[in-house]
Amino acid sequence: MKPLLETIRPTTFIESAKLKDHLGLDITIATETFQHTGSFKFRAAYNLASNVENDTIITASSGNFGQALAYACKLLGKKAVIVMPDTSAKVKIDAIRNYGAQLDLIDTNKIGRNERVEQLAAEMPEAYQASAYDDQFVIDGNATLGDELAEHGFDAVLVPVGGGGLISGVVTGLKRKGSRTEVYGCEPLLANDAARSFRAGEVIANEKEPQTIADGARTISLGNLNWPIIQSGVKDIIEVSDENIAEALRMYFNLANLKCEPTGAVSLGAILEDKERFSGKKICLVVSGANVDPDIYRGLI
Amino acid sequence: MKPLLETIRPTTFIESAKLKDHLGLDITIATETFQHTGSFKFRAAYNLASNVENDTIITASSGNFGQALAYACKLLGKKAVIVMPDTSAKVKIDAIRNYGAQLDLIDTNKIGRNERVEQLAAEMPEAYQASAYDDQFVIDGNATLGDELAEHGFDAVLVPVGGGGLISGVVTGLKRKGSRTEVYGCEPLLANDAARSFRAGEVIANEKEPQTIADGARTISLGNLNWPIIQSGVKDIIEVSDENIAEALRMYFNLANLKCEPTGAVSLGAILEDKERFSGKKICLVVSGANVDPDIYRGLI
Image: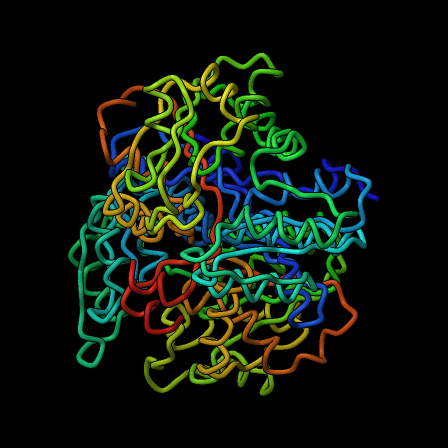
């Protein structure tokens, strides 16, 4: 078994003069779109799958964690069982199938993802139940991105937020490296449970799965392990309209030659919400992934 | 003035498990899509603009060299005059304008690009006339990519061919590093002057500007300085149908999360022409650039 740091691909830093000039900001992009399976989730999934002793791992995933776990399990000779909404991006469904995982597609109007995982876990008592974000192995895996970001002395990094797995990892990594970089969460306005939780000082959940175009952020609430890390380690959480998420995706395409998925564009979308806020600062935008259906992408660019 | 090697961005190497599995080949992508101005041409343009003494530089360019020269001249405080067909990708035209260059759009059915450059040169005798490929500064600048590729011990690298500036640079760089990597040119079938020249042993020109979707390869013929380097240093030149160029562009989008322009996809297109040819070899596909109009890209994915 290869150690995590030999298996993950370091993030790809991109500086686009066109994007910087267009926004008048000192922007560096840290893109996880070329990470194995096309998103940061592989960091989490490989760390988890290589550390638990179970041979079968069950998870609920809107797609990217499922894909990452399926690939990690393939590399490690384990079995992945993936529960995901039947509305998930087709490329994500196909990819998971191709990695040899067992797929369980559900109608989220009829049954919750976690509920279905519980059902499957009862059927497979030997399996490990992995949360895509609320799991220490997941946070530790994602912390490797924080380690990398710590080397660059950014004033601020902006990170997309769904269940909080990535941002809690980034905070953890930066902190253990002694970095003073500030961390901002960036969340779709239509799925703003993390922003509301941050303001309220306690975890507030969405009533149902939110229908933002950022499908990777359609989570009900932050995880129990993620919340205290976010509450104490994040500077603010910025809410981003779906219009600005789409505009950010287009800007990446046109100005930085970067293909990303809507969720990956949320951190640039946060800049578009208030361009003045980060003026004069050396900022880093984390792009979390790029797995998007061509039909949806075509409509957005 | 910053030296070339501090100014250019090293190429971005990507390995996509999905692409490798899909084709059953050991493929590494070397993409210049994140190079300054979105293509390898910046290597050439910056090297040229920083080495000639003239304050004004005139060139004919289908877009990427023009854009790169415009940006290089902006960085160096020089004036760029760019002649390009009025059918060039709109993003390329806009970008050149934004870099502050003087634009000269022509109807190539009425006047040749080089002819127009001659007219302008007569009006501006103090200017340097730069070929996008047939210039020693251009070849030397592009050779820096060959230097980088030499570090990786590839069996073969596949390089898109238009006027031959990139491939002659790659051959030059690999050679001076003592690399034994074989170099293959990849050319649109609709613009196959280089392949025909290679077979004939002498430079053969296209009768008029070819209308392949790979707009970066719509050149009339190889350059005089490029030809001997190609003839002696290239293993073969593979002709690629426009269908396979389009399919390759789609594969990059879907399997590697890579946005590229049609010309950039020609090297993967060459693989699709004959998948068996590179079986068992460690190959590298050079992706030359990513500046493509959203409308065209939308139609292709």
